[in-house]
Structures are given as structure tokens and as C-alpha cells.
Amino acid sequence: MPLTPTQQIVADDTNRFKVVCAGRRWGKSWLSIREMCKAASKPGKKVYYVAPTYRQAKTIIWDELVNKLTQVRWIKKVNATELTVKLKNGSSISLRSADNYESLRGISIDYLVIECSVNTGNPVNNRRIYSCCFYHKIILSQNVVVSIHC
Image 1 (cartoon, rainbow, N blue to C red):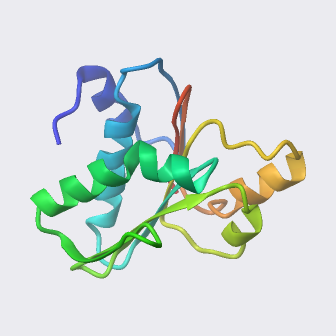
Image 2: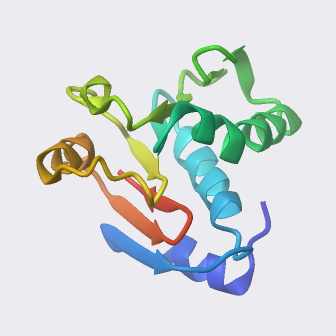
């Protein structure tokens, strides 16, 4: 997936935590899809995309993600109800919502993209959402999409 020069800077950065402030039409969703696919290209990886609501997760990224994975013929199984794609190499990419933060606790994730407006209004709950990726690398991209790379 080709990236713009500024997107490439983010993609090439090796820091554990990355924060990107970018406006509309910068390509945050495109970069997120590319980076999720890159992470899922390694066998047996679990990749999550978390948006404030389930509907937003589906609206923002689902169709584009499935189209891209179909083009490269990586898909083994698509579950549109669960918003999960299983790949031929054993990895999976799942879209989740933060409106039920408890459903994100106790999971081990290899790569996580978080929509920037994910905020439960409760600092304790916010820490619980972010802690599911505590031992992993994290990318934060602000304004419309926050990408967290675990």
C-alpha cells in the first residue's frame, strides 16, 4: 500500500509509542489499515481496531479493510457479524467498540488501533482500555483516528 511521505515517516518510526496529530483527509484510516495488515502479515498475530461504538468501527474502516485483504488474497474467513477477518496465516483482524470496555479486558493483542475519540469519561476505564496493550508497542494518532500499535 503506497503511503504519502508524511505517512511513511510514521510507518518507519521505530519508537514504542507514536503520537501523530493530523487533520481530516491526511490518511489516518489508510495508514491504520496498512499498519494493521503489516502486523497481521506475521503468522498468528491478533490485531484489533477499537472505535467509540461498534457502528463507528464498521463505518470508518470495515469495508476498506475487507476490500484490501480481498485484493491481496489473504482472507480465510470473514465474519461480518463479529467484524472479524481470519487470515490464511492464522492471524486475525477484529473491529471492536469501547462502549463496553469490560469486553477488552484480559485480552492479549499484538497490534491495536484506537479511534481517538475513545473516551469513556472515566479515567479508570480509559486506563483499562489502554492497558490491554501495556506490554506492546503503541502508536497514537490524534484527531479522528488514534492508532495504537502494540
